[in-house]
Length: 130
Image (cartoon, rainbow, N blue to C red; front, side, top):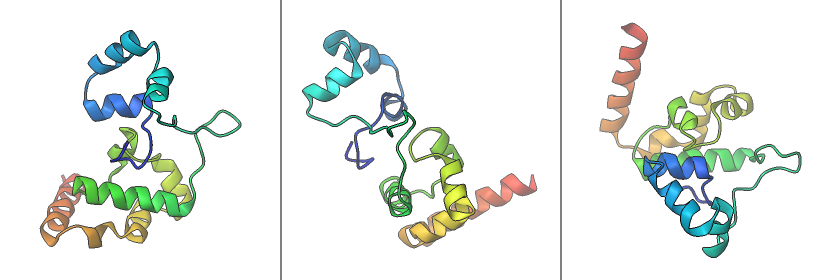
């Protein structure tokens, strides 16, 4: 919860822990994910009134991206969105025109050291050219 800046969803919890083992333990002890959150006095991941995932402001999206970069010491990627470590890739591209533009606006390159930037650019270059 601290790393994400909010209570994780069950899917995010499984991704973060890297195993479903704890999921089964939570259900055995508490009966459900929501009951476990309630016992810990945590608010569940908020959904919108229409039942879909909550809507993020542009500021929240950029803040999540910046916090991710700082916490993981890595440049956020589409894979991080797929792993539910960040809001969806589509939300970023729709709001900011591209994922790269969102990275720039979030200041992730300023957060990371030159060495990490060079390593990321080399990896992206290799993906495109090989």
